[in-house]
Structures are given as structure tokens and as C-alpha cells.
Amino acid sequence: DAGVIQSPRHEVTEMGQEVTLRCKPISGHDYLFWYRQTMMRGLELLIYFNNNVPIDDSGMPEDRFSAKMPNASFSTLKIQPSEPRDSAVYFCASRRGGRAYEQYFGPGTRLTVT
Amino acid sequence: QQQVKQSPQSLIVQKGGISIINCAYENTAFDYFPWYQQFPGKGPALLIAIRPDVSEKKEGRFTISFNKSAKQFSLHIMDSQPGDSATYFCAASIKAAGNKLTFGGGTRVLVKP
Image (cartoon, rainbow over all chains, first blue to last red):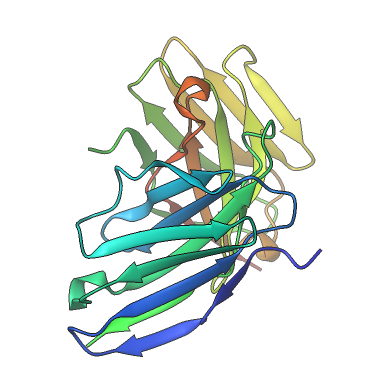
């Protein structure tokens, strides 16, 4: 089992650029979550999907952020345009329906916006 | 609005000692309380979890104590080892709300040899 795969692991970009983060959930998991982790705000849920459908995006900070899940094995989180305050570690997690507590996190993408 | 408050932010314990991390919540609708462990450069990983109908759960050296009336729960790490040095997060969720996890602020634990 490869676990949740995220790419890139590190991203450095300039303010105003578009950033796309990618996630491959564990095969067979039907829930996918995007989190953001910062020192100031801790671990925040941005959005989650069930069976590729966005269920709750109330944590998405603003319209610059968007997320898609075109199929069961791939999701993207896009920031356009990026700002320095978006600098954080972004985690993707997945779980199987019926196993509510067993979220499996990926290794994260460290984003730095200069 | 922080719905789950965690303390302390950090703690240092000697090898063999007991690490205690506390969390408090306000929303009585929470019905699941997991703890996650995170090592530097890694994503959080589920450590142990409890439901509010149980007052204590133990798995190896890790124990969760739950006080429903006080709306508090805690993690005890017995016989702490240097390998336990990590950041620990408590969390809470509501089944009826899709089991979204609300995390506490985290506690950085350092176990000195």
C-alpha cells in the first residue's frame, strides 16, 4: 500500500503565480480531505470530497482557492493568484467510508510564496 | 473560532516519565475524539481514539481519559521514550456532520534521554 501520495513535496513560487497541488488517495478510499497547517492557525480543514463530489468547502479561505476531484484517484488544490500568506504545509488525507476516524494523511506539500 | 482547545503547547519529559496532554471542547454534539501523532516532515497519523460512552481507553503505553461532564479529554503517554518525541493533536468530530475533524492546536512533546 503506497499510502496517500502528494506532489510536489516542496513548492516555491512568487506572489501572483498560480500554484497547483496534487493528491492521489489510497485506492478504495471514497473520502478525500485537504488541510492546511500553519503555526498560527494549526491544522485547518479546507474542503472534503465524498465519491469525487465536494461535500463541504466552508474552510476554503477565499475564491483564490479551488479544488477538484475529476476521478477517484486524483485531486488538485489550486491557488490563483498566490499570496505570501498562503505559505503553509498543505496535506491531503483519505479514508474509507464507514471508518470515520481512520484518516490517512499524505506527507504534505510545503508551499512558500515569496 | 477554536472549538477544541489543547494544552500545553509544548512539554519536556524525561525518558520513562509520563506525558499528559489535555483537551477541552464546547460542542456537546462531538461524538468521536481521536488523537494524532505527527513527526517532523510527516503527515499526522492516527494514534488512538475514543467515543464519549467510554471513560478510558488504553493501547500500549497510550491512554485516553474522557470526562464527558467536564467536556475534557486527555492523552497520557506512560514510560515516555525518545521515539515518542513528536507533535500530538487532539481532534473531535460529529458523525452527523460528515465526521469532519476539528483539531486542537497541537502539543510538541520532547522526551529527553
